[in-house]
Length: 191
Ligand SMILES: Cc1cc2nc3c(=O)[nH]c(=O)nc-3n(C[C@H](O)[C@H](O)[C@H](O)COP(=O)(O)O)c2cc1C
Image (cartoon, rainbow, N blue to C red; front, side, top):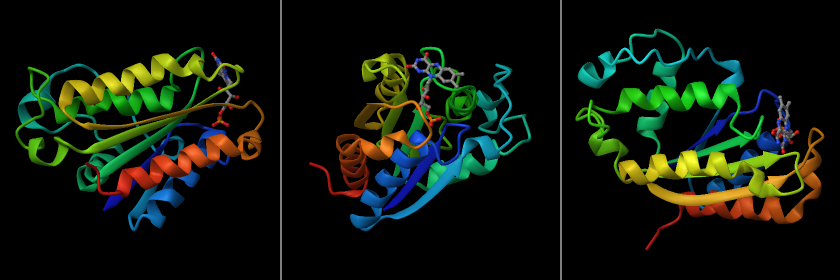
């Protein structure tokens, strides 16, 4: 199993990063090969809605997303980790997710070039917010879960936690355990 972690916070070593690392440890323990991509270290422009990719399967924007796309195609599971910024995901994660357009045809079905690799791929999410109510991240969960549902990906679930200061999440043993379990699940045999 190949498990890919996508880190969507610009605060490297912050709470999302800690949670994702924990999830990837869980995946590794389950026998997976893991990779992590830090979106803030990549150049990812916003989707232009030019629709060319719907026909060709190739994005006209020449930046780091093509390489990330390759990693996604190779992965059996993709785990995303992101903090809440203004009741939504960070700009880094949004730019990345919008560029998933490349995987679809004009009917929002998997592009024929990618269908065999994308359908049934596992996808999971970890969120952190400063608000004491972790459900503040519900809009982000909705976004990823609907993406999974629309496309027939396998939704692994979400871990939602609260923390503010950099690394504060390290004191939240429950969130760390949940992240580890999500990572394990991403690489385990599923019913
Ligand atoms: C620009 C910005 C906007 C934020 N907006 C929210 C918000 O709407 N709701 C919330 O609960 N926390 C908000 N936060 C707090 C972060 O979600 C919180 O600090 C989180 O732990 C950051 O995670 P990180 O360490 O992975 O970057 C915001 C933080 C920043 C920098």
